[in-house]
Amino acid sequence: MDNKPRKIIQDVVAIRRLRAILWFELSTVVLFIFSFLGPFTIAIIIIAALLFTPYMLFVLIKEKRYSWITMFFIMVVLPCILILLMFYDFVLLSAWLVVPFILFLFYCFILKYSVADWLKEYYTHEEYEEQKKESAKRKQDEMGWSP
Image 1: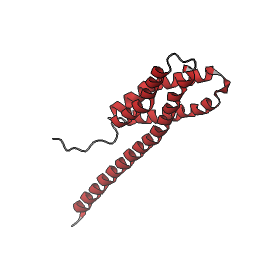
Image 2: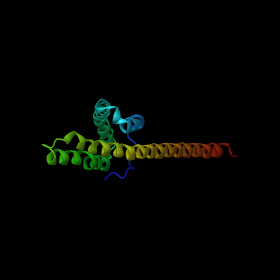
Image 3: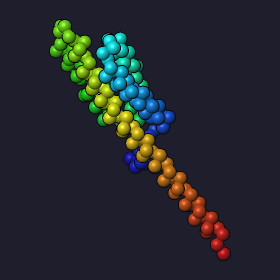
Image 4: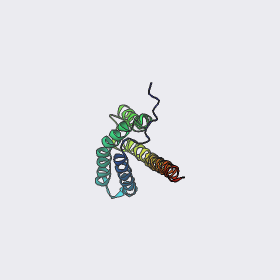
């Protein structure tokens, strides 16, 4: 059995890109609040969310954050399926489909801060490793220079 410690982040670039997209995605909340401009605005916001979701899931799978993937299915996919099953013939189905989108935005809000914590933890660990290497090198230099 391999007791090697798990890397904090597998792909820092992908995580940083995910964080940037999450910040952008959540800035669309302002557009959502001002959705009185019409269904066109809501449609653009939902399309952006649908385009972003595969990348988000790809990064979460790559980082082995399976609890986040499970939470996504519970918070977003399951309510969407339930709404479609319960209100399929209902005239206001499109209004009910806004609920999973709001849950998606809430999920992204939580994920945004978690991703920031992952990056903070990664950079702290990298700094610690660098200091440890410098300390070992300093000790080695001191041993080499002593009479």
